[in-house]
Amino acid sequence: LVKELLKRRNTVIVLGRSEERVKEVFGLEVQIATWDSLDAAILEDVSAVVNLCGENVGAGLWWTPTSQAEILASRVFTARKLAELVAQSRSSVRLLSASGVSIYADSDSVQDEHTPLPAHPDSFLADVSIQWEAAARALLPEA
Image 1: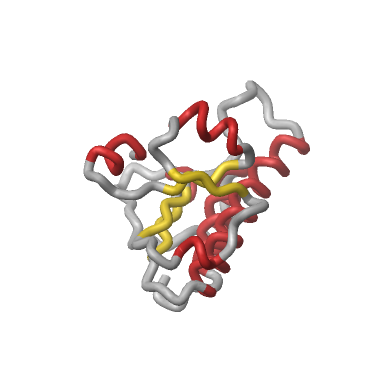
Image 2 (image 1 turned 90 degrees about the vertical axis):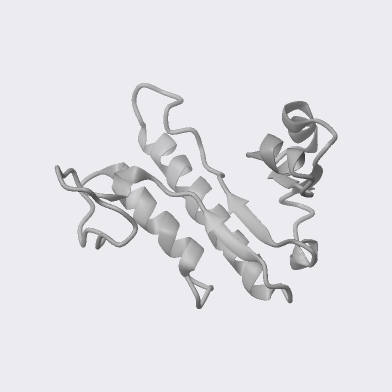
């Protein structure tokens, strides 16, 4: 996504925990923001925030209670914080937040964004996805 946006001459701001790590992965063509430096002012000239943050769900063979807490917190905290910044922004910035296909119950029928969410998630990842989407929508009236 970053390569395509840069190819189209968009300005890209990458949010990461470490400025050095962002430089290592994305080079010097992107602007860098860290959680410590992040505030609503950074969104003044931004048209969209794309949230792809989250602990790697495939990093281990088994999820421990600790890794499950990290997976959930990394998505919910990030979505909530970015939604807060977008809500505080004086610009018309939009928040596009990733989610997971595990949000939908197992089914042989086609499911999409119009499919009602299950009242009781049938898996850990479904629960994570529901909480993740709720955090992203919480402060945004048009969501």
